[in-house]
Structures are given as C-alpha cells and as structure tokens.
Image 1: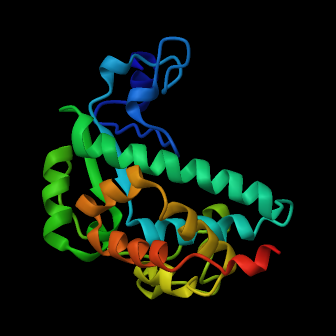
Image 2 (image 1 turned 120 degrees about the vertical axis):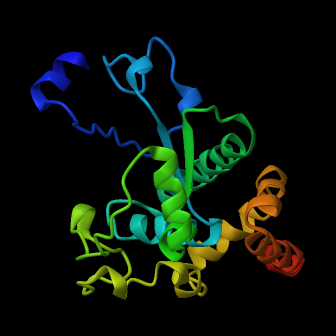
Length: 210
C-alpha cells in the first residue's frame, strides 16, 4: 500500500469495494484486500439495507440475467439471504472499532445521520447533491429511464415486487428462518412483522399435492 500511496500522493483516499463479504471472513490464505497490509486500512464500511427492499432489488437484478434459470436464481438468492443475516449479526454484536455500519435506508433519508457517519469516518461534510443515475451494471434494475437520482424510489422496491411469484417464494422461505427473523426483530421490526404474517399464511391446501 505504501508503494501505491506514493504514486497517488499525500491526501489520497483509497477505497476497496466488495460485495457479499464480511470482515471476519478474511484469513491469511485468502486476504480480503489482496497483497495490501490490512493493518494499514483505517476503516471497514459495512453497508446494509432493510431486508424486504434488499431482496426485492437483488431478485429483480438476477431476473434481468436471461442466462439464469429459476433454480439458479433461487440458489444464489438463498445463499445471499444467509450472508445478509450474518452481516446483520456481525453489525449487531461482533464489529470492532474499525468497523462503521451504514444503513442505506437511513443514509438516503436522514441528513443528520449522514453527518454523524461522516464524522466517524473522518470525512468532511459536503453537499454534492444526488446527481445523475450512474450506469454501472446497467443502472437501476427498476427504473431504466431515470436520469436524476432523486427520481429513484429505492424505499419502495418491496411494494413494486409484491406480486412477483419468485419474490413471494423467497419471502416464504425466509419467513421460516428463525435466525433471520430474530435479528430482523431487533434491526428491522417492520420487515419482521410482515414475514410473520407470511409465515402464518404460506401453507397451500394438502389436496394440491394429491
């Protein structure tokens, strides 16, 4: 990192971006940040989102990949649900002084919350506006024509997927996961309440199987 930093100059900010990974999953044989010395990394930023909106967005994203069968999507999604649960548990009880957790839902909605987190990260508070929708990965899975980020209804994804059968099936399975619902009870109680209603009404008549 010292060599790379020398090329960038003083005051440079290095960001290492990962998906579906927890800080405590790193080991000497498979370091999270490649050859860089982990002791030189100042912060681990853990970004998470309310369960219903998160799984809705991930489901839609995978549905847009036409090479994936329903079974393959389901496998990817259920493994992701387990990683999501472990992330919430890590944030709730195992994170250390270098770990800063950012709830996407609050970050997008609360100016004061953003300010407090920037203080934790040692970054200046600057209003750079939301700006244009970036095209990375094809842009928004829901609103392909949206140009301004203020147009994105990221807190409504679960409602937009409410009648999607794959989404309903994933929620039905997730509602049976006691470890998941226990942590949601503490961190996203509204989502837990909805999963509770799904668990109570998810059985189909036995005659369907005869």
